[in-house]
Amino acid sequence: MVKQSIFGRIAQLAKANINTLLDNAEDPQKMLDQMVRDYTNNIAEAESAVAQTIGNLRMLEDDYNEDVKNARDWGNKALAASRKADEFRAAGDVADAEKFDNLAKVALQRQMSAENEAKGAEPSIASQREVVDKLKTGLDQMKNKLNQLTSKRNELVARSKTAAAQSQVHDAIKSIDIMDPTSEVGRFEEKIRREEAKVRGQEELAASSLDAQFNQLEDLGEQTEIEARLAALKSGGAKPALGAAGAAQSESTVEEADFDKL
Image (cartoon, rainbow, N blue to C red; front, side, top):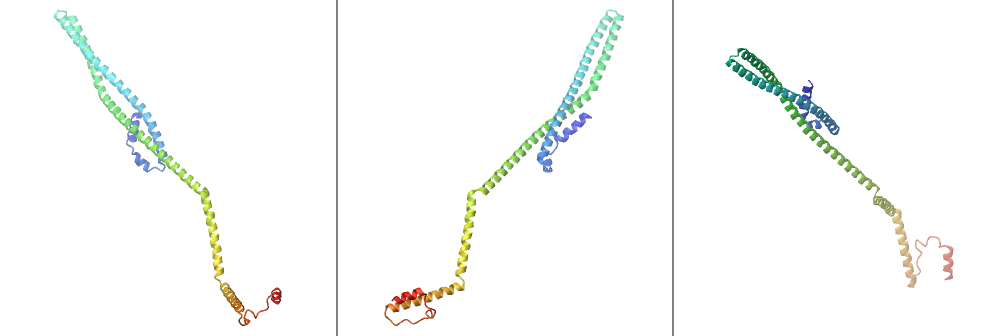
């Protein structure tokens, strides 16, 4: 039962479709690790079972070869005893002739017994040889599967480490970008530009108001009248009329004093 159980496990593991098992696994790496352990343990157990089976086969073969040798030896002894009996009978010694004939019969009986034992062991030997061949084949297949599993696991671990390293590099680059002093300067410069644009907008808004526009017009008209009257005075023309601006109250006391001196 033990041998059959081990043989069944060897056959099952040898036929396992690794790719299908990995595709259906939630965590392929853990499954690979477990499968590597299972295959390693079963291979060790299978090697022990195969070694025991081979040992039993060799014992059967040794017993078979011993029976064959005994059958041959007893056949030779029977032939020798028969010839000796013939010699005694030819010499007229009937008693010794019968004695050696009886020895020849005993030898022949033992030859037949050895032959029967050898013949009876042949089916067991053939069956054991078949089992050993299948166990060896299955063991070799299991070892190949183990090599595939180990290779896939190593590949998966390497890819996982590479992905982790790339992720770390990516995170490091992002961290460098965030802490980059030039990026801080850029953000500060952008803030200043926004403040400057805000001031320009406020100035443009103030300049576009109606009050500011009317004030500019009034200032321009008054300045134009002043320039015209000054030009008339210098040319000796008529006394300039009092314009709308002159209808207002006189200039400050300091300015009137200055005019009196003239």
